[in-house]
Length: 359
Picture 1 (cartoon, rainbow, N blue to C red):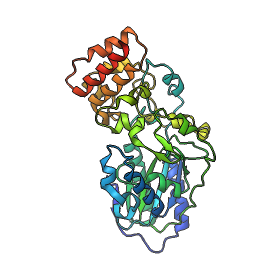
Picture 2 (spheres, one colour):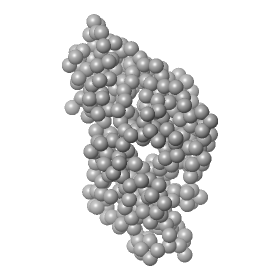
Picture 3 (cartoon, rainbow, N blue to C red):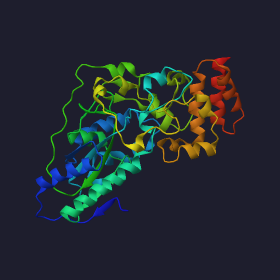
Picture 4 (cartoon, helix red, strand yellow):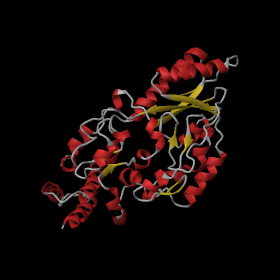
């Protein structure tokens, strides 16, 4: 099913009525918020270039290769005149509380967004359904759907579409939804009326900066990805710097600390979306149990999950670090020793480090 179209829109549209319909249809499709903006991101382009010059992207070389394309939507989809931005909440009432899991160093912490099925396909399908609804009402038009699948400054676009504001932890915040949500975009050539941008409501609060375990938030609105636990456990492909390993604690895929302390997340609403419900006990499973997963087991139990992108090798690397930070229990030592002769030098090195921690 196509996720883009290059057709030309009709010229006699009532664009204000269409924009209202689009927002109604988006909510009917399960999106929790929707806004429309123009693709003008000059200020954010300058911020991106400064961030790249400081090397804060770490090993994410693609950030530099894409250059300014991220801030110029019409280069991703020629003819783009407006961007329809959507938000989808992902926290669930069924998941074990983050604090309880982080407080038990024998258990594994997985970022809450990754506990269920991978959101990319789910949201793309719904954006495609939204495009079909628009096409059925307005006729053929040019569009392209994105869900973290191309160089898009999605937080800046969502801010300009009125969905929220970019907080000091560099995440998008919403007064009624906190930050536990995912973003998607529909680039379009429809001349829709744009919404007013979101206003900033962080004030003097620095809770997220103080809470970051590794000091990755080096200042308000400034994130050094090289120190970020989410980067280290998900994006980073090599050896995790030894100096940072103790700060990872039992976090094996991502980190939610800067969100958990944000006052605005008191207003985050749990979703009843079935695809976001925890799978395979990943909201509270024991580290030793997950470390014992064979590659076949890992592939089977992470099918349709964002975690699968790690691969089994980095999965073991991350858990080895967490086991090194765990209490010295016989089950922990046995688990580490079982992987001491693993074929991967990356895994072996992190296992040996963890065992030295318990010596």
